[in-house]
Amino acid sequence: MKGVVTWFGQSLVLNSLFIFLNISGVTLVTMGFHPSNESNQILFVSIGAVLLLLSIVGLVIFKGRLFMSYFSRVIVGGLFIVSGLIKANDPLGFSYKLEEYFEDGALAFRIKEWFGMPGFSLEFLMDYALFFSVLICILEIVLGVLTIIGGKIRFVAWSLMVIMLFFTFLTWHTANCNPDKQFLDRDTYAVNDPVGLQKLDELKTNNSLKLVSKSSNEIVIDEMKQPQCVNDCGCFGDAMKGSLGRSLTPSESLWKDYLLVYFSFWIFISQRLIQPNSLKENTSLVLLSMIVVVFFSFVFGWFFPVLFGLFVILLSLWLIRAGGVYFSNYWSISAVVTFVCLVFVWYVLAYEPLKDYRPYAEGSNLKLKMNDGIEGKYQNLLVYSNLKTGEKREFDASSKVYLDSKIWEKTKVWKYDTMINKEIIPTRLPSISNQFNPMVNFSEIGKEEQKLKFIEDKLLHQKIPGIIVREKGGEQTYEVTLDDYKDNYSDTSTYEFVKKSQILDPSLNEISLRDYILKAPRIFIVFSKELSEFKSKHLEKLRSIKTMCAMKKIPFVLICNANREEINLWRNSNNFHVAAFSNDATELKAIARSNPSLMVVESGIVKEKFPWRSFPSVNWLKKYVFK
Image (tube, rainbow, N blue to C red; front, side, top):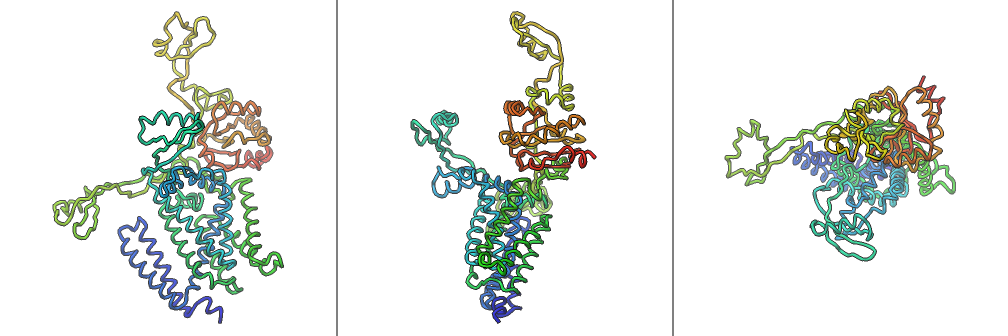
């Protein structure tokens, strides 16, 4: 009898119908606010709101609140497990997203603006971004498990509401961030800080700056700045972008969180009625929640969450029955699930994500990833307002509908409002942007770079006729163009002619490795986000691989985020002389989480990718790569 009352209230049939109507109403309201349904927004939202109201009244009258909370537990619990595991698969990537939010002009600007605190900052949290990343991942998984099995439900209900309200605030901020808006920011500089001194110089000419105070130790300046808007909330890491080709838009992410807040609210208001699951309830809830996990695993093209989710849930249920004095309680279960998650997180941090959704994953065609963007399509529309009803109508000025309507003549009914630029097809940037552009300046090309045949060919084809001159009485010679010689070096009292020669075109600044990577039959690339973290122990196997590549005349290069002085110092101190190219640090973070890492690319396709802990031996490469 208790099971029937607990599950279905006063009527299984009616409460099942009310839940169906409730979900239908939620779906219609959500669809109504999606930009693709703008023309039918009022219809969708109206019908959805009516269904929601009727279903909620019905659930209250027929005591179906607990039944609805069970349905909500399935949705929230399953989604929390998937979401947490997707983030835990790449905690470094999620930490980079958190760092974006912690930047001074990102989330902090809301506090500065709302509470009049221009000096407020969250930048101190950037050093703890990885800690928060791991904490959030594990907390989501643990809460997902406890939600499904009904453990510590009051703690879970409060935690779900707090977390979802916080996440909703983040996605609201992301969706409503206006990059053109300005806010008041207060910066403190040391008295000898070059940036602060430059700001002091600009005070007289820059109206956006205001000196707050100046002492013998520091300078405090107020400045009007623009927000740093985060375009992607990172809710599912790179998973959705890697599997479906795009992430959720900020507004879609916001509505996703609205839905989760809604379902979490049903759990919250039913917390006093929810008891730890019986055997029958465990069977039903685990099965239904795994259907949710399977669905999202299918969307993300990765079925490991199914195995992981089933393992931690069954492990938790087994501990409840056989855990003895110490493990047959929900706090101990939470600790065990946390330990399992920590082992998984340790593995992906020590190596690489188990499932790589980034465009540089093994098997990726780099050329296709560089050209898979979509050019947006936009249309200028004239907007007219109805003077009586306030209705707004949009017209393409060149369309037959607009010309036939002659709406511009109906001045007593319609009034021209404005012109808008409407997005018809959204722009989608390529998976690999121009930030991937490993390069070296012409003036910095050294012996190691010149050993690469494509560099040699580049240098040969970029030469023009010139003259070598020398200062009189000195040994230093200069390569100059013919025009430069006539204008600046023809004074025989200062310079003397040495000989005519082919010199590098001084108008060319750099050589990029990008196109060569796409064309080379095979190339070995070592990536390093930070050379200072590149230890001698990382070089043991790389030396052998570099020697083997030299014997087989295969290019072996280093791509890092460092200037030429830092590169030369590192090469000399480690006695590892390799052709080196510089690239933007942000893109290097996307290429590999491990520092350093090794990638083998064949005709633009990533064939192998190794974190430093699993650098291959020469014998392994001979067997599996050079076979």
